[in-house]
View 1 (spheres, rainbow, N blue to C red):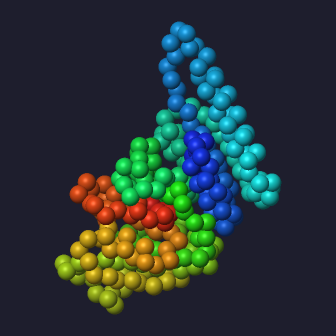
View 2: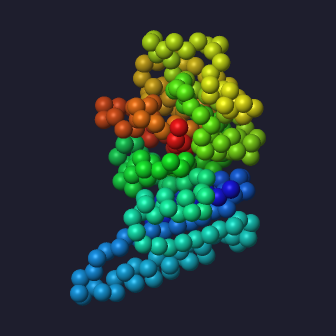
View 3: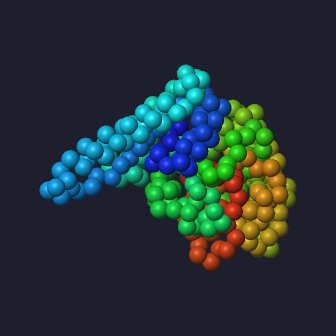
Length: 268
């Protein structure tokens, strides 16, 4: 199993790396760390700028590796790369080449999820990749073992995608079932005893079906996450979905970025 962590060498990225290392250890996975710097077209007076940026990036990567505890370096297979290009295109190409199963990115954590949680590069990456993406807030806990794995289910048809296979692997590695949370509106025809397709797909990894009433999905999910011990929130990315409603609609005022809960986004 291979996990990918893009970094910009910022202080926050370093903190998020601790979480990524912890998860890699739990999953007994290879950890790939990549830094992508921008190709700035030099003027005549800056002909060696690209070389300077590359040297700086390689030096920063070595400094990062030296900052890791010896037991981490010895226990994990860590592969690094420094390269130039468009961040999203390069990360996607790397993930395809090395058969990455999960991309992990640090987020700043704020009440304004639209502006920061999915800011610039992270938003572009989530919108333009089919790989599962784990968004790690600044103050995320490393105790994945302690809380729920919670999948916000929209009761729409889904097949067993790479994302579903990933969360089932996580469930097995953590010896923890995946709970489903469904927000039921007045127009929702889901019955409490209905055998949902997602339950069947999860199979032995399914834990509990939680159905709550509410017209505002984002509000109800945020409230549930705040009031329960949720270690990881899982959401399915698809067009015109619950995910879109929560993170990309400007009229949504209550957003999940107010929590410090990591969010795993998987494609349908």
